Length: 342
Image (tube, rainbow, N blue to C red; front, side, top):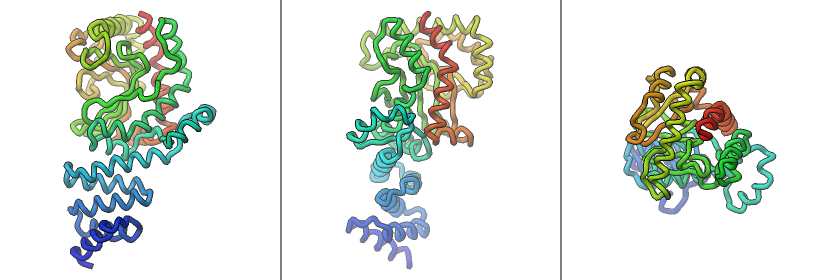
């Protein structure tokens, strides 16, 4: 069948609201015969969504958006595909922790996965920050709720309670936020003006790779609607000075060795992780940095990168991702506790 006939058949299926198996086959043939036909890829994605083939749908939508980044139908379908996908995959939290939450999640109509694969990063890269947050929120929340059950989480909560801060869980629901394009992040309850137990998810086109971070962050900006911004900024600056003091003395060699052994990097301002900086140089930079307020953001921790096969596998597998984050924060807990107490 020629391209014109295939196109007409595909359009006829769409007009009838038929996105079943036959419509999928027609649009597949059309996309293969005419790879630059963004309509074929978009309709093919719609068929795959309706058939529950979300990986195939996301791949088709990536092709459509490569052809036309302003294709709003494809963007909307990508958001819908991610939303449906995360609703059908089981919660990665330990079985013993799921019992008390099962009815709540069932009532909300949302099971969720905690892994970040190609589909999730595609949504993060292609969607506006608010839309990406809406689509990927269930994925991130499932991850945070699983982390709440880990021993390090209880130790952070206990340290904060001893300091007079409230909270019975490390992460509350909706503890995740949209940053700039291609960036979502989460930090512990009450942590805005504290050394943060911080997670970040990145699909920034300029970086050329997808990434996830876990570690200790310092948000020294005074922007936003947070209360006590001036006092809060001073408080975070004092915490960062505590970090510098500790890292210049008893923690210097420990942190250098840890960064070297665990794929750790620093990050500051709006820059990507400083992967070109050797661990010893990164520690010296932390110690000697005198521009924290101007930089606004400082971070030290571990990173996963999508172009490393082992990292990509850990990102996609919810249990492996939780284990990786758990190990990161368990390793860094003594340093975080020392900075926090100081």
